[in-house]
Length: 521
Ligand code: ME8
Image (cartoon, rainbow, N blue to C red; front, side, top):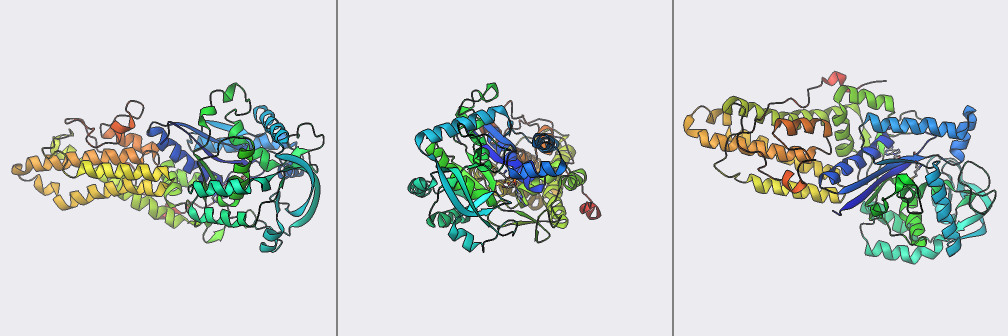
């Protein structure tokens, strides 16, 4: 891990209310940001809202309010999500903020000056809902219909400023070749390579048919295309073209470690964005990570089907199961890899019961109870010097770090869960409650309980980014030291609890009745 790292979510459209998709991407970035911070990395975690474009202009017109008012209202909703879910973003960028607008204009001046942006005439297949043009080949592949809305693509002609994307084809191909992890997962990388092989056409980057956007500098009537405006948020938030007091000192966070996005917007992030950065002579992000979609009971979530898991529904889940349980479900059962994931109440309940109640809750509770009963609540000494446990814990920590390095959050969670399952297995095999009946076994009993407690503490440290609420309690109960006090190397290591430390029994995750499991609207 590098000394500093930046992780970003997409900036969300303000013409939509926050839903599970937004909560998902932001939550998994939050897990990673917390993990990286725990490891001692200086993290900058960025999210925000995408506020310009025809869609916002139209939605506002329908409601009879100015677009800025719509943007203000919905940006506040998105911010409320961050607060409700205790997400630890370091900034929230809005594309209508002056700090963003002035820098976008500065970047465009640079692009015009270098010749990467020029004035020309364009004709192509336009997806009105997505505000996106498709090449002839791609449009044919799509059956001349929007892959998102299913509506017909329209043939459109415009005099516009263009970004010379075609000029970057070779450099992009070379970058993909020399940086196999630039786009992940691999399935998505292959998809991008396939599309790039069809050839890259220059992209119109201004519009003249609406006004709710950033004015193109020195080109009256031209407004910057919302996607170019939006992509630049990743560098305007860091003040790379000037910025203001809020962005000062942030240049060190570029290039981003991870841009985390949904698979539907990968082309913009994995092809157009790196080409723009090349044109601006800025370094490219280390990895663009594209996750898949949450679907609902086997069906695509969409506004028209009305089956989006919305904020009130999410809040019903957190009300019944707690915030940590929500994060756990998002991070371990979500569509992080190349396949979509089904959101359903039964599955949520099972994951909660199996993982959190029966394992993360039960194991420390058993260990704490036995130390209470047989040792008066004080950590007994271990005459066996940890046995296999120091190595097991080191392996778990190493696997966790590797998984975090590749954004494999479920894998990182598994390494901690495996540790707890091994503790459970040792208890089942050695039966401390039987050993306790004969004083001749005291040394062995003490060693086992010490080892269990030490391993539970390490697992707790590894689970903290996923379960920041309850793992704090776990750390307290197991005599732990908090992150602020102790460097990672000394925290994520076996044997940190001193003999005699008070160990408390605790109940982390209460059982929830299955009947409460389907919080309905
Ligand atoms: O595309 N499952 O914003 P947006 C998982 N403003 N994640 C989902 C999802 C689902 N069913 N639905 C949405 C935009 N998402 C642009 C981005 S970035 C420079 C500009 C998540 O409000 C996922 O992260 O439509 C997806 O990429 C994002 O929401 C789209 O948010």
